[in-house]
Image (cartoon, helix red, strand yellow):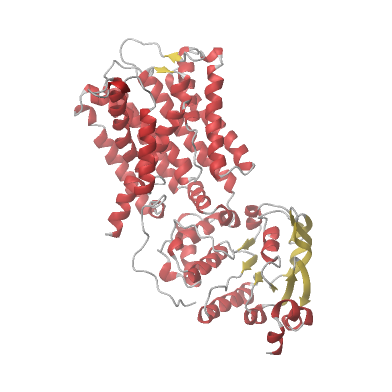
Length: 243
Length: 356
């Protein structure tokens, strides 16, 4: 199989700070890649470089084989690569439904079609009851779902999720995981997700990359990476390994 | 998926800097806006039958303030780009009209189109440079101020534009819609101004309903999220600037045809920018109708202050001839509104009505 998304040798410097050091990741169509690592490891910076928030200092990003390095975020979104944010970014003066409708409109849906599609996505992500609420007044957990709903309304081929489960209680995580699994299994959606919840990483990931200090420390299946002594030492801790 | 939290029973809260946006974007509400616009224009058209000739001067001033406020509101209220240089677009509209009429012998209506074209090109050009190179927030605001000041100085130093003297529109006999000239005290000035305001309000409503308008509002709320959802933030912000500049240029044309005079200070001075800002802020930024409310409050107040300075009452003779009091008063009002009514008068009223 060929990689849908491939980032090679991605480095990023912010003046004196080397945030990324030659990171390589690759994800094949219909697969889910988990990205783990401690805070400050460079995971979100990697997302920002891949999705066009800012260009990498060096390295190449390929989407469907085409070099898209440094292309602006809005162009990459229209090429099918859409992301969510760790810190939620709702259009706070709009309702939940209007937020999602903006995404549907951006994809090209018009008028009533955009609204209908937005409504369906809102229902699918469990936000139906909140559809008419101002998004800025939503609880954090609902704002997380809104991030996901907006991204899904773009009907992405590659979806990058930045800690989409953060802030959710266990009962709230399960339906989100079910949805993501369903998106992969029934729609063949390709995903890259940053996550700190190891149960979710184990359940969803076809492949895992562990980052440390801006570099890839380990890569492989979830079991391989999560039992790697270096990963245990650098990220999970001895207690987790023993548990 | 199921939810474990429950939503509040109330729906979208209104008001706020952009409170009406949550409703203005809905087609049903927008249809309501069209009805309100029609009723507003119909009722306002009767004003000349009610007010005296001297009061009509204030009514015309309200129209100028309102058009400027509507224009500024597109860019700052809906677009999130706080301009302190709308005098640039007002001045270009005024000077293009005056130059067209006096020097080129054009109809003022053609002068207005010329002013709109130049304003749009100037606004988009300067904003492109500013936004392309990440001048945001206060830095963007300062760039707009600098642009207006640069234009003022350019005109002052330009012989072709009569330097500090400016232009006086030659008076013609009789009434002429084509030449936009009527006898002093004619209600036609008001009716034409009202028609122009109506068109500007219509443009504002259409903008808020349109895809570019909604994308602009999304980008104002969060430009990073908007870009991540495929919205070309720069392009849509420039579209908002273009609409804003065009509307503000219309105010410049109306001003010069009504007062029949313009000079660099009137056209490009900070006072013109102040008028646009305070009208929208007092009424309620990011709302369709806020600038109208602001103009109805601020234009008569401006007239009162001007009269007060021209002929101060006993005990205040020392104020005679001291310019700048109006600016001080505006500043006080602006600060008071920002602290006490951050949503503006209209925005606050809408917000309270929805909560009750």
